Length: 567
Image 1 (cartoon, rainbow, N blue to C red):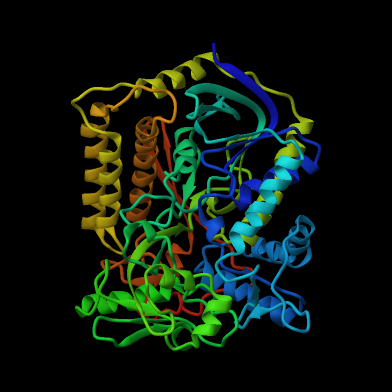
Image 2: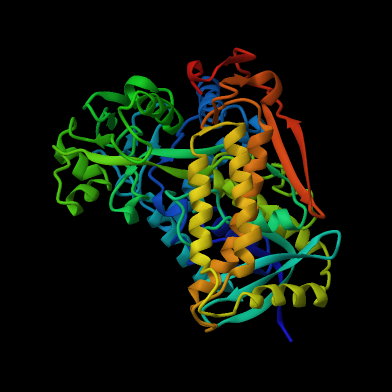
């Protein structure tokens, strides 16, 4: 008999969105339970947060400029503009105050003023640029434990449970002990993030296998704009284990300079202050310029180009930039040497389709917090806002509503699926081999896409599902810390999420932001400034589009060549 834990609000995910959802739901008087596949704040984008946009005053002119940054340059017009205004007000009026109450201290100058990065949108950092995320997440983690909120770390949610009409809870595998249990919840919040380890080179951590996307897809939720997948162009190439180390192209603390990219011939082909000074997240322009170098044979996607801070006095870089440690650990001089880079699959702009007023999906009882939603790219501040909205809405609904019973048949079926992978033999396919193959497929799909590559990727993914999954076998049947067992479960999530991503990309007949099709090399605002939605119901894939309102900002052109657009 499977144990069942009862709660008002279940939060799945331990990053900036999930932790804020937990705290805000608890503030509303709800009983909250948290499940984290890894450890709170120890994986995902949160731990690599560089800086946080800081708006000390609000004027109509500044608000419009900030809105333009969020809408045009950060989300390529694929965002809810009303949401951006609400989120901006939260950032100004609540976010930094919440963090200061938790004990986060910001770097200040000799006069005691907050030190802001000089850019279109001023930003501040805690201690050093590149170190804000760990500090913030440590404070949130401590607060959750101080309040005595039940937390199940190193426990993987394997499925969402429904009663046929609404989400009523989830099943969980405690992989430290091999224990399977269920959680009955009046409201469930998915907050598993927007960065996953789905390609050969990726910024996602081992735990991130798109579980949130896959679980939502399996219960019939809609997914939108999954194809709008960002890449880093300036991540460390070698050693491979360091591929998450990002050499920030953003405005740098303590200087007016930004990092530079050089091709194999030593020619600089990108620096933000020269090529995209209006953006505080210039990654899309970086990779567009890199693609031209690759086409010219002066760089490769996996090396042959370099980044560095050698044009900046080293004492400034060392004082203000956490990434300076990368040079010292490699035995290099940050003031003289450049590091070879490779592109890395980073965060996803798309996700689960939600109503941004309450962060609720079309499935009653299911909410989404943070970058897992399809409405905004992310960032510690914006996803914290999502956590607040989702936490409060889910708590209010839970306190007012009754609890629905879990289906014993559904729980037993999921238990059978999960434990069905706990088989060992000398033959068969190791789950890690299947994971590596999936990552290889998505890496081969790459930055430059077209119909032929989409079809090849879809065929390859279906071959993995058809040929490799039935042969999965483990080296051990231990129920404790069996990483092979976890890999097998990850394979299923990765296949579902990657297939949805490929199908979504096939539907979008244009190029935009980080999404480039050489068979549709133009931005089509007339037809594709929308949520590109896919879902799977009873095994059948469905698609539709949902126009995105533009009450404040609209593109100047209805259609323009991709490489001529500045967003």
